[in-house]
Image (cartoon, rainbow, N blue to C red):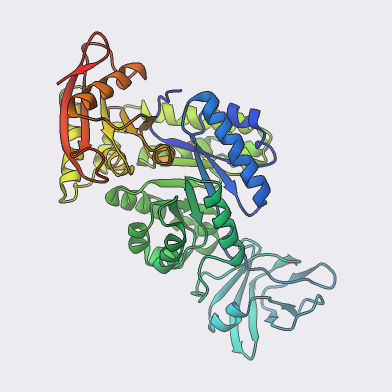
Amino acid sequence: MRRIRRAKILATLGPASNEEKMIEELAKAGADVFRINMSHASHELMHQTVQRIRSVEARLKHPLGVLVDLQGPKLRVWKFAEGAVTLVAGQKFTLDSEKNDNGNSERVYLPHPEIIESVSVGDRLLLDDGKLQLKATKVGGGVIETEVVYGGKLSDKKGVSLPDTLLPTGALTEKDHADLLEGLKAEADWIALSFVQRPEDIIDVRKIVQGRAGVMAKIEKPQAIDRLEEIVKLSDAIMVARGDLGVELPLETVPGLQKRMIRMCRRYGKPVVVATQMLESMITAPVPTRAEVSDVSIAVFEGADAVMLSAESASGQYPIEAVATMNKVAVAVESDANYRNIIRAAQTEPEATAADAISAATRQVAETLDLAAIVTYTASGSTGIRAARERPSKPIIALSPNLRTIRRLSVVWGIHCVQTEDAVSLEDMVDRACVIAYQEGFARPGDRIAITAGVPLGTPGATNMLRIAFVRQDGAGSS
């Protein structure tokens, strides 16, 4: 199963798609990583889904990544006596700490003391995905008095967003902690952390994960944008979670932030996923809108590592068509005449390390000499990610003895992953690289390939060698 595109596809699994047959169809259509959303999945369902993905992976002989997405803190108002009220612009409305189900058009219980303690006068409170907006006019004594800026219908347990308020609580709730431990037990490749506000949120999760999975920070809070660079450096990958980002920040700022995040991640060599509403209309329609196709193509043109489907594949009527459409768009963009120039324009200078210098040189050598492929030996995955950071026009084949590494790299731009034993000598390394490049359909006899690795072999993150090898008639190599 060789992909002919570099951008990867994440597909969320849900009621429409978590049967094994459907997972296989989605993988064949182009899904590289499967997301399990813990807002909707029980531990039992999560384990069952992971087992199904692993069965499909074994059958297709193609590595598939598993992303467990933690719910994060869900802030909600409590219940109304009549089930819903209508708020009018200009009226007063109070959120208080008096627990009861008798909310009315003047007040409602807010079961989050941390909000009541943190909100300042002048802060905005957005309700029901930003459909209603309140402004705090008086705070104290367990009460937030507000004025309604934009009114509308407000019903039981609708969400509360706080774009102006830094909450003292971490991003990891008790539920998230339990879900995280179960995700690690199920050997998920990636853990996505929702509603990250500060670098400390990532540090807390890393202490628990201890390298057993990659930590992906979802950027969906204005507070995370303020400390974006620190968060990117501490994370293994970033998700541009445009849904909540577009609620808490002006919508018109989100495309610019998306561009900024993609470029920052490329600079630091961190995979970046663009998510939310990419093919939203395909939840109910077999074809997307022109605007959605344009949206996906912009993320691919920008060099995002992956694009993600949410409800389109989890609960929509056309999950396979949604993945196939995303695949077609990515293939079309990457064969566009302008694609290379746009990718090259965003090229970043290599960092002053031997590994980065070798990776940059490998790209240049491969393109100048028109080599068939770049083959990287990678124990931890860092050599593969460095090769991808350069966005070469030649295919990248990542070889690793570690299945966990291979699966984790399935979210990274342009990497074709193959599990193989560690080479025992330089000659074995050259032969193995040539044979696999030949077997996987990337090189023919007479072609040349570039090989990068860390010597001594098996040293994590120590890329310090570049070889050019000929593929012989028998598929083996000579350098």
